[in-house]
Amino acid sequence: MNPVNPVNPVDPVDPSTPSIRVLLVDDQPLVRAGLRVLMADSPDLVVVGEAGTGTDAVRLARDLRPDVVVMDVRMPGMDGIEATRLVTAGPGAPRVLVLTTFDDDEYVYGALRSGASGFLVKDMALDDILAALRVVAAGDALIAPAVTRRLIEEFAARPEPGPAPAPRRPLTGVTAREREVLTLVGRGLSNGEIAVRLHISAATAKAHVARLLSKLDARDRVQLVVLAYETGLVP
Picture 1 (tube, rainbow, N blue to C red):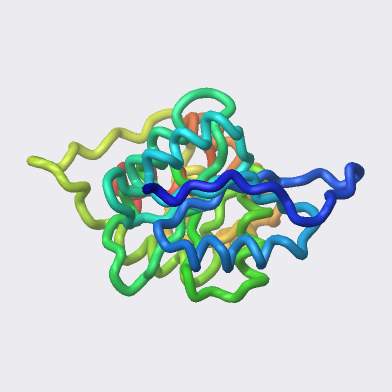
Picture 2: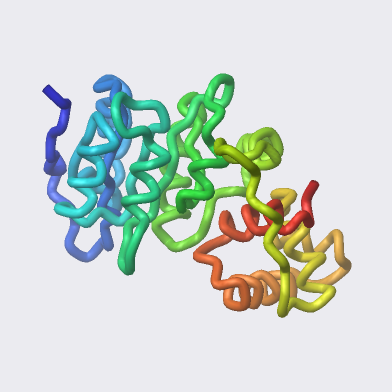
């Protein structure tokens, strides 16, 4: 039997506090239980359901309409990459924050391609897990922390499984400065770090990133990272 349990919050939620609805997806019940306990003390985070397989994750994401899905990568049957692709398809889709074990997961770039907005590493600090959920729920992408940068550097250059690598897509309609900014985004730099590197203000760096998101029809910063690799700006 698949371990799927829609969950209600244990404590009442203050109606004046906007809540972030979270769906937990992991084939290990202990991992889900630990995350659920962690979030129970945060009035802005509400666990609305749990799933132990990718198939159940897709179904519950459709039925429960969470804001964020915390998605494991390796699960029986449909893995987290395919589940992420299905969950993030279509308008109004929830954000997906991928759970990974850095030492042995080799599918992280696939998750980026599938629409994930960032990563949780299973041994990261508890406060960082909560912060990651809030960042992704707010519409941003979690690529700034050093551990995520390591993941991007390690896996983004690996070819996607398949009979032949896809040709590099052309990069058109961007200025030379925007190309510089996109390169630095692809290397995992934050807006502040980009500003220092290019000797511009943080506000200007943020404006360049916003224009890139619009021009390249990218959902979030993670997709800009993918584009930087796919267009060859980051080797």
